[in-house]
Amino acid sequence: MQAIQIIGAGSAEPARVVTNDDLANIMDTSDDWIFPRTGIHSRRFCAEDETAGTLAHRAAEAAIRDAGIKKEDLDLILVASMSSDYAAPTIAATLQKTLGLREIPALDINAACSGFIYGLEVARGLLMASRKRYALVVGSEQLSRLLSMEDRNTAVLFGDGAGACIVELLPEDAGIENGTKPLYEALLGSRGSDVILAPGCYGTTPVDHMLMDGKEVFLFAVKTIPEVLEALLEKSGLALEDLDYVVCHQANARIIRNVVRKLHAREEQFFMNMETYGNTSGASIPMALAEMKQKNLLKHGAKLALIGFGAGLTYGGALLTVR
Image 1 (cartoon, rainbow, N blue to C red):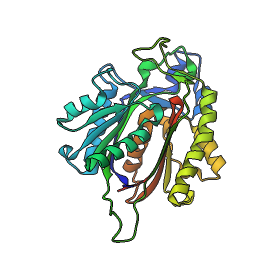
Image 2: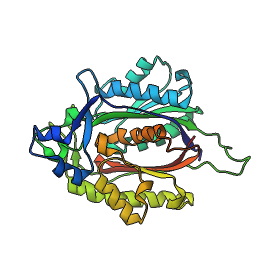
Image 3: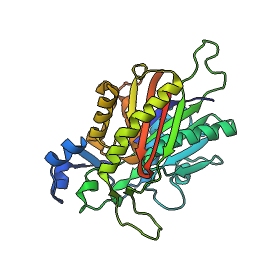
Image 4: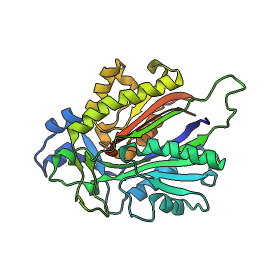
C-alpha cells in the first residue's frame, strides 16, 4: 500500500468573531453555561460576501504556499463539505476555476465532520489509480447559515472556516534505501444514523436548521475515537506514545478529555483549538493542522493520528507523517 504524507497546510477564518457573550445577547445562554459543557469561548461567522467556497480558496492558496509547490503541480482537487455554496457546481470545481487550473479532477465529498479523513483516503486512491503525485484536500464549511438562533443546543457549537492540506503520494519503494517504511494507515466507517440532521435542497421530510442529539453523539464519539485509534495503532505496530500528536475532530473539549482519560494518555498529546473556532465540521482537522504548523509544533517526520466523527454516524482515522 502506497503511503501519503502532508507537505503543506493552510487555513482561512472569517474576520467576524462571535463570542459566547454575543450569543447571550440574542438567546437564553451564557459563557458560564457554554464553556464548561463545550470548551468553546468563541467562533467565526462569515460576512455577507463570504462562503464556504471563498474560504476554501484562501485556505488552498495558503496550503500551496506552505508546501512550496506551484498550483500547476496539483493533480487533484478534493473538497469535503456539508455546506456547499450550490448543489452544483461543487466547491472543488469553483476552486479549480479561481485557482486558474484546468484538466484535472475536481470533486466534493460529504461525510460531515469525518469528511477530511474520507478525503485523504479518496485522494490517495485516486492518485494511485492515475499514477499522479499531488492532491489538494480541503475541508470548508459555512455552518452559520444552517443554524437557528432559537436552538441553543446547536447554535452555540458551530462556526465557519476552512482548512487545506497538500498531500503527496510517496513512491512504492519509498524508504527502502534507509530501511524506513513510510507510515500510513487508514480506517473508515459509518453506523447509518440520523441523530444529526442538516438542512439541504431536497428531501421528503426537510428540516430548516441543524438538529442534533448531543447525548447520542457524545456517547458515540467517546466510544468510537479510542476504538479507531487503537485499531490504527495495532495495524501499524506503533504505541500511542510513538505518536507526536493526535488530532481529533474539534467538536467538544469534553469529548476529547473523556477520550484522554479512557486511553490513560497525556492531554497535551491531543491538540485542541475549538475554544476559539468552535465546531467547524469537516474543516476542523485541517484548520488544526495549519495552526500547528504555524506554531512550529509539527517537525519534519512528525507522526500524527487524525480522527474524525460526525453525522451519519460516520467515523474515520488516519496515521501519517508530515514533511
